Length: 245
Image 1 (tube, rainbow, N blue to C red):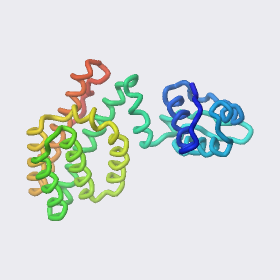
Image 2 (cartoon, rainbow, N blue to C red; image 1 turned 30 degrees about the vertical axis):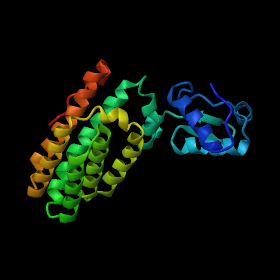
Image 3 (cartoon, rainbow, N blue to C red; image 1 turned 180 degrees about the vertical axis):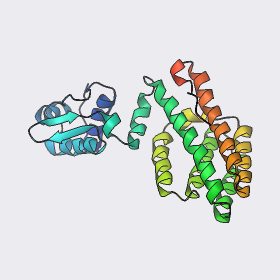
Image 4 (cartoon, one colour; image 1 turned 120 degrees about the vertical axis):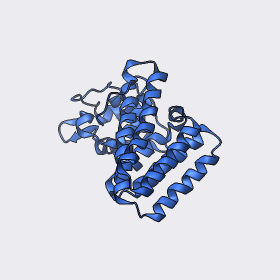
């Protein structure tokens, strides 16, 4: 289950191994990790590096460290935060519903983001200019991966216009988690023409301050990605669940 760790990035590599074991369920909620002496011996690391790694896990809401009680695994669905998504995604092969939930979040977030910007930022010429520049780049994109990255950049620029700092920070967190899986997720995007059409239609709705159309353009596009994932995966767990209008 555990393997020796090289000297460089010691604490991070320890945290990576233990984090994967916890997220995989090999250390279930309520259980204790082995004592520090045993862990340090099995990993061939010093106690200081091990403690630093355990602090990282505690910060993520994965464990609770208590004097006299050792290191106890937490129920991360109750104690963890959004940053865990980037660590859960590599395990998505055994948790296909996680991909479904990520795409559902993307759809809800993108739809409401478009509506907010249409309502609040009609006169934001600088923001609209950034969106148009990204749409122009998307017109010239040569690969699906490049187009996917530009589409993500488009929604980050959109978030910067919405007037809500938390939404922008939330999108940045998701972006960090998604970045390493862009080649896979790029295959869940629509065709190049569909992506480009969506950009232009959304910009037009934003320029008019048309909240309803902006929300519909974003929702139709992001729903298509979720439905494509369901068809490609061939698993019932990947099929998107219905959302209210």
